[in-house]
Figure 1 (cartoon, rainbow, N blue to C red):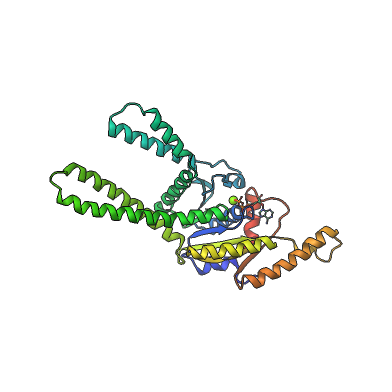
Figure 2 (cartoon, rainbow, N blue to C red):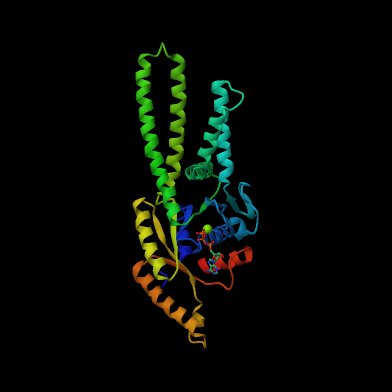
Length: 326
Ligand SMILES: Nc1ncnc2c1ncn2[C@@H]1O[C@H](COP(=O)(O)OP(=O)(O)OP(=O)(O)O)[C@@H](O)[C@H]1O
Ligand SMILES: [Mg+2]
């Protein structure tokens, strides 16, 4: 059933320091992120597990209120962080207000402009962009051996990945235009000394953003540095969706490291005197485990049992880490 043990991937590819678990909602991404962070930290690696989910749940799994508090040490070497996108959006708004004050020498923002600033902040894209920005900050800053992204469910993760390429194309275009303009500007340089300086500042800012985005999106798609795992369960719909998603992720050049099957019923139930209901569940599971075996050829890294309770708190996280890594 298991083709390569999960622990071997980490041993074999020590340069893969950006770890992601993808999959449909509720299958165990956050659980696996936390347990992997725990396992690596216990092995002496300095690990940051961080959430890009506005409905982050690292706080729940570690039973520590870490929301918006920056990297928080959970046990030695293990740091967890939940990004407060709202705060970042508020900082953007404040920056815009400050720019208006500075540029127009106003001491109060006109009401129409203020309502525009408010409306823009309510856009979902604004939150995404704030999260993206924060992730870029984290990755560019460095300081950890491993970065574990506690990802959002599939659709959203794809959006997040595609944003990097959209951003990239957009900024390429703008910087190109800016550079052209600068050439024209040089002709009229003497007359427009001050304006030229402004344009230069904008171009510099754009190039700076571009460099940051390049850095983070190149990590996401770098086979040498990134390990992306898919979480799935032994159910028809989940298998189908996972296949589709894997194809989509491949389009974005996200390097796939393999699949982890979660919530497998304990095998010692078999042959016991169990109720019809459980017998049916076991039979169904057996069937779909075979389907998984043939569908995801030689890429199954772990098969994790259904535990006796949900996974919260360090004791359960430790148990989960044992189940995943042996
Ligand atoms: N093997 C398991 N045994 C028992 N409970 C599990 C197991 N795996 C996950 N769970 C529980 O299932 C729930 C969902 O798991 P988790 O939050 O990790 O999923 P997720 O993929 O991160 O969800 P979302 O897409 O909403 O972020 C949690 O309550 C978790 O404790
Ligand atoms: Mg989650």
